[in-house]
Length: 433
Image 1 (cartoon, helix red, strand yellow):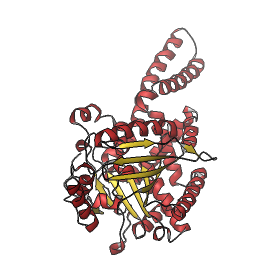
Image 2: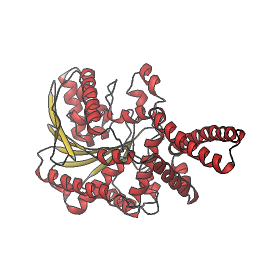
Image 3: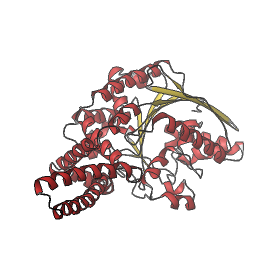
């Protein structure tokens, strides 16, 4: 029950910044975590395997009455992502627009909108900005062409010059406003998810297969009390893919060695699973839904427009398994309750910042705390089942209160659900952002 050794396997989403920036963020947020709970933490240096596909570090955490050691694996995809972003701008724009309108006409965008209109709006955002910039540049090119015609140049000369100017200026505008708009990044992300859903990115599949083999190896050899696979953002469906493939390699994966947990944060499964061609992915969701040897917890936040809030990952894909269902457990997370009010108001409209709150330190002690999940003494299953008791274990001032909280956790008594709700399938009705 009391975790002393934990193994975290973190599956990154579609983030080109990769290891270097993530490790810096992790180090900064770990310090905040230590100050908040008055615990001592020691962070090891990252060590990469020879293939640079997995980098690991350790965290030693100690407080009154408990101490833990965590091995943290960071599974890397940034080389693929950076290669996507290096693609010529014209190619990215044409392919993204083609895929977008294809999904509009085949009804998939309508399914996105019915599942979560805010996420559908977010998907449309880069195309809307692209349209505005294209109209502005087209107006400039039109004026330029009329000026050339006023100088007496014929149409067969002015039209090609105006077209070339339009393409050049639009490319430069997209490039030099990228840090403000993120249009090219989001278009690349959209292209990748379409191709991944249609099995057109074999290099991703091959690496996921190697990661599945690695998970099987860790499960056989680790001395950890629990292995937690963490998938954030696009890492949510990559994490489910990796676990499903590992289970096909080793059907007894969760029945020997450490307990295996899948924790998905800010997930967006429909951007893969709603494609008609993604039957393989829906099959994997179905298999995880009825697999009792592993446990899957899916955390969603209303304030995060980049996840599908109040969405059942199974029912939304038309997957019905009846009474055999055991996964996932859906957890609504209220960012307003874990961040100081004044600070929350400063970034509540910064969508990427809000999205990353899932994997950042709290500013208030709370049942949902990513770094307590990583470093704390309470196993993930019991933390989510009895949130108040899990919080008391690390915040109580006296040993008697802590022991009483441990007894509650060990007895399996559910918490009151005020901090974190735990449900099979449908999230609780009472949710706030």
